[in-house]
Structure formats: structure tokens, C-alpha cells
Image 1: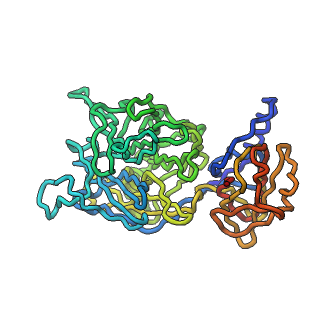
Image 2: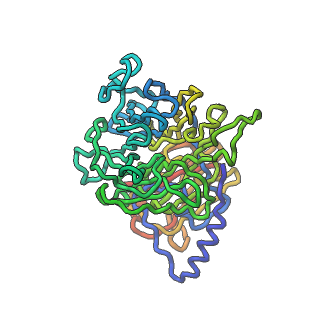
Amino acid sequence: MRSASLSTLILATAFATIEAGDPPQPLDVGQRRQLFVDDWLVEKSSDLELELHSPVPREVCFRFDAPWEGGQSGYVTVLADGDRFRMYYRGGGDLGREYTCLAESPDGIRWTRPALGLFELGGSKENNPKENNIVWTGKEKGYWESHNFSPFIDVNPAAVPSQRYKAVTLGKWGTGEERRKALFAFVSADGVRWARLRDEPIITEGGFDSHNTAFWDTASKQYVCYIRASREGKRSIARSTSPDFIQWTGPQLLDFGDAPNEHLYTNGIVSYARAPHIYIGLPMRFIPPSERGTVGPERRKTDGLSDAVFMSSRDGIRWERRFLEAYIRPGLDPLNWGGAHGNSTPAWGILETGEGELSIYWAEHYENYPGKDLIPQLRRGTLRADGFVSLHARYRGGEMTTKPLVFQGKALVINYSTSAVGSVRIEIQDPAGNPIPGFALGDFDELWGDEIERVAAWKRTSDVGALAGRPLRLRFVLKDADLYSFRFRP
């Protein structure tokens, strides 16, 4: 994993402040959890790095082995609904009839297919039972409303109960030679019985033959839809927005700064539930066979290769792609090297499956074209809460001071991990960098251990309420430690 030094940014920030002439306005962090997925908070730093943390592979939690599923099953969506988790995915394949299927789980590990019986398949009931888990299928085979059916629970306060679930999916629009791909909207009261929101498509500009995703963005208070787009001849990502899920803006390409132009086959973009003002993206990165068409010592031919990468944003348009290394690798299993249109593709959604645990899912054993008789499977990986990226110190230690900020609340809570000899210390400073009496580094109760939510304390108090609303800085001094997030809470 690549770690990025902050020294270049520190100098740039300092010179920008001098040239501007006016002191910067303090950042209002309120009581929102702050993650170190970027250096938005950083004013100056020494001997610290931003370190990317990949999920730890766990069990294969689901196999797409029902008669109506098979080698091209994929485009998985996972979400939480009350005390259960739901998984939606494509059965069949884009070379044949496609089905949108549903599985459910109490814990994110054990998944079962509900016997719904909403759609009766052709053939014998022995091979194609009526009691299947299909919740939708299109009128025709291939690219017809089940290719990438992507549901979400609409948390818009204005959403009506009959449309509590919404989804976008690729369909076909027009007739004859004018017929083309477009994105359609679907709605449901229960996430099981679906209907078109209207006959016309909602978005007609785009590629769409990927996992297009949409959700109500609580930060910007609008619907957002991330779709397949093209950037200088490579697959990429664009965003459209809507106030009502019917009228949408034209797609706008995401801004990846100076990151290299790579094939980003999917987007995997979510508003992170523990910090909804921060967007996390887990795209599948595709390497076509023209660039790397063989693999292994036997030089086995492939249809391309794929892995997954990590990116983050604070507005949904400008994205931080400093980590160019793979977030999820194909691994030791040779069946994951190839099948490049599916393997290593993360499911859309990040689930909280335990105390301080996040679960991320990705596809394995994908069969891009029939003939190999592969059964795709879904692998689960785990990550500590907020554990995507940490502010990392090696044994020699280092420190970071934030830009001026204001907060609301009474306690400073941190998510951290140290070694047995490591430590975390915190100082609260005024905007000029002077320690505030009682909150100096020497007053801090040094921390070591591994905790998701630890209240910071100084010798006299852990109550920082008297400082709420006042501009201040935080100084973190770390040794052999990782700091994942902090927030102020009541």
C-alpha cells in the first residue's frame, strides 16, 4: 500500500495562506465524525503518513449456484433494512435472460434466498422452481431492465411510503434504429414487488452498461446518480442530480485531479453512514487484454484483469485518488485472474455487521463468457469502523496540527490503535498555536491500546464544552500508532 507524505501539502497550504493575505476561516466540524481519508484538516505535519487499509478477507458468504443464476451473476447491492440485511444481484447474464434476485441475512454472513414465487420460469419446476427469489426480470434477454438493477432505501423525508425503495436500471428506449440504452427508475414499498416509476427513462446520456447507482444524498439534500461515462477513450464515472428522482441534470464527469486516466468499470460510491458528509468510492479497475492479456508462468490467456481501488470525496464531484494501488487484489486463487468484467468487483454498499466492524463484499470466480462452468461467489472482508485510512506514525513518532476549527459538544472522542510501546497524545491550542491552559500536551493522559471510541482526557477534565464555538487547533502526537477518526460529541 502506498502512503503519502503530507509535507508537500503543508508548504502549499502555507504559501497559499500568505498570498491570500487574510487568515483562513475556521473549519466548522460541528459534531461530525472526521476521517483521515484526505488531508482536508491538516495544517502542518511531520513524520506522519496517510496509510490505506484494505479489508481483511473472510469467508465466501454466498455462491450464485441456483439454476437461474450461474457464471455471469453479479452487480451486487447490499443494504441494511431494520434488523436484517438484503442483497440484490443479477442472475442469468448479459448474453441471455437476466433476473434481479434477492437474498437476506441476519448478520451479513449467512445469506438465504427467500422463496417468493413472483416469477415462474420456463421448463420443469425441478430445474426452475416457481418458489425462486426473483424480484424482477425484463421483457427480453440482455440489457433489458435487469442488467444492473440497483435498489436503495429512500431516506428523503418527503418520500412516500409506496416508494420507500427506489432503483435505477438499464433499459432500452425507442424503436427500430433509434432504439438505444437508457436509465429507468423503479419504485417499491417493500423492496420485493417492483414497478416502473414512469414509462420514460430518467437519464438518456451515458453508457449505462455497468453498475449505475443512485441514492438520496443527505448532505446535499438531493438525489444523486453515478453512471458509466467515457473519458478520453476509457471507462469512467459521471454524476447526475435530481430534486425529485424524475428530472435529472446532464451527467458531469467526476474530477480525479492529476490521477492517471484508468478504466473504472464500476463506481461503488456511497455516502459513508458514520460520516455522511464523506463519500467513499470502491470502483473496479479494469485492465483490458490489449494491455495485459496473459497471466501466470504458463502465460494463460485472459479477457483482461481487474482489481478494486479506493477513492474519497467531500462534495461528490472532486475526488481524492492519491492511493493508486489496489484496494482489493485478485489474490492467490488463479480463477480470479481473468473474468475481468466481474472479478474483484466490490458490491455496492458497506454494512455495519458488528460492534466496530464494517463488511465489504466482492465478486470471485466470475465467468465472462460461457464454457468454463464456473460458479461465481461473493467474498466478505472486514474493516474496523472508519478504518479505510489512518494517520500513521512509525516507531520514531510524529505529529500533526489541524487547521483552525470550531466544534460543538463536550467530549473529544478518537478511534485509534497503538502497539504495546506506542502512544497517542493530544493538545488543544488557540489559533496562534499556543497551548490552552489545562489542555497542553503535558496535561494529557497518554493513551495506548486499540479502541473505536475513546474519550480524550487531560489531568483535570475530559469536558471540553467550554471551548465549543471558539476557533482552536488540535495537535496530535503519535508514536507507532494509527489515528482513524475523531469527533466531538455531547
